[in-house]
Length: 37
Image (tube, rainbow, N blue to C red; front, top):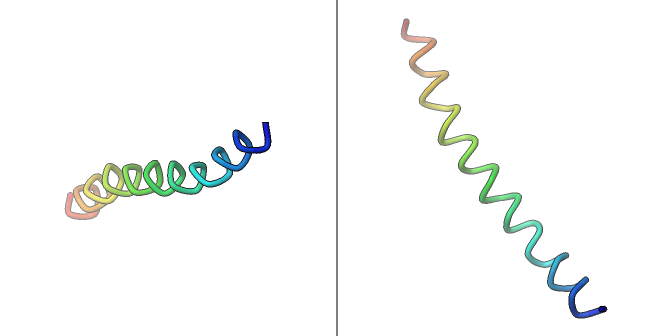
């Protein structure tokens, strides 16, 4: 159980970074298009 908790704690920031990066990559082009138009 301790190992599972450690694994979750370690992998959570990685998932958050991946989700954050994909959100930015989706939003950034969209906001650029909105600014241009």
